[in-house]
Image: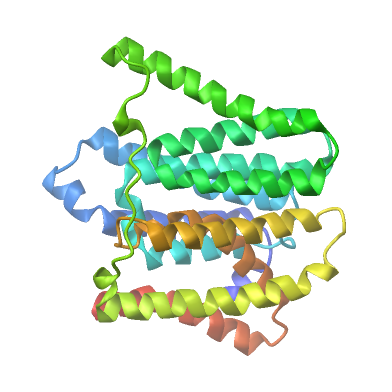
Length: 305
């Protein structure tokens, strides 16, 4: 039933996901909305960010043919968001993730082999900007290295371009610091905290959610890699880059200093695409419904536990 609704790319599907995401947002920000613990402007900004992110993901997927003509990717995005609603409470993480998605959009579009230098500059610029809001976003520079291997093996200029993007952000940051604080770089610009303490996950809710997340991740990623040989040769590097992005996102969640679910924010976009590819490939309708139903049921059961 659920999968049959999203097996076509229709405007109504986007609206359904949007309504679902808004509901999750309302629940996640319930106290702030009714107790005025945050300014209305900040709440509205977070809301607009997450709505725009849904739109952006849908655009990237359809523009680059990352799934067939369906809405499974944005459906998966909504489900993953419901799995870890604390993602919606951290403005810095939301901004950092938005910039990473901007960067991924430019990196994935390298498959067209057009304006490579501009796209590399844009991608490095966005990742550097994301790093200012969340330091460990810096790990996504590895995606640019992988992209260079795929698309620009022999052009030295293309290797230099990402450093120009980084330097541009550093220049703007220095100007900002000089104007406001009369210094070039402040220590607070790059807070490099990390933690391998997972005691926060020692609850029935997190054990359930993490079990479902990592089980589905391993299961679908294995299938994802096995199915890459069937993808269009021109677009195949894009699918590899998405897989690498999801692995980096997992690594970030492992070393993140905060363990409340928000650390999985960078996994949302790439894993949604991977899930979308897996769901559309399931031939048994009953299994497809059970799989999606289990994903939807997990956050609901998590609330009860």
